Length: 203
Image 1 (cartoon, rainbow, N blue to C red):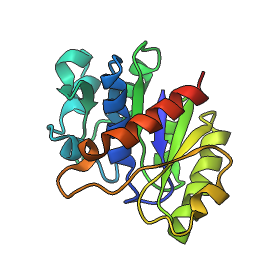
Image 2 (image 1 turned 60 degrees about the vertical axis):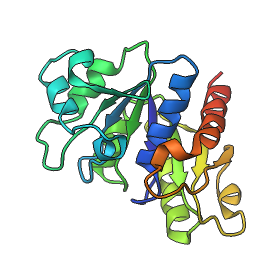
Image 3 (image 1 turned 180 degrees about the horizontal axis):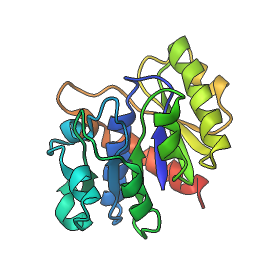
């Protein structure tokens, strides 16, 4: 299970989760993306699906009924105020043979640590701002302590002077800005490189 994490909100975790999943799907995998961000569950919005997948899956619907498929990616979205906790879904998926990608919440509190406890590795997403870098370092340390060590960093736009590379001891893959509305589909080559790096580091 791969966690997409980062200490600060708005750095591109959800877009990265979907971009990596789509890259995996293009290579013949059947990835599942789970929205674990109870504070701001926007996976369904970004993917263009409904937000009831997680609740249906928690209600024991099989993954094929509960989720929505988009571009070869199985999306388990959630809604703001959803009372369905994510842990039952992660427990059900923890032994899946499919690649499971978890869109984690920002921060270092309990909501952020819960999904990391189910993952075996992580990707830290950050921009080049000082705050995002500091929070990204904290997220990386937290993931390491919880048994989901970062395999690489996704550097989203606004890296000022290459400071991201200097702050992490894992490979950094740059993901460019995409046109408004293109979202995760607008940078296929970059997400392909990120997926290949994840795969290489996990070999």
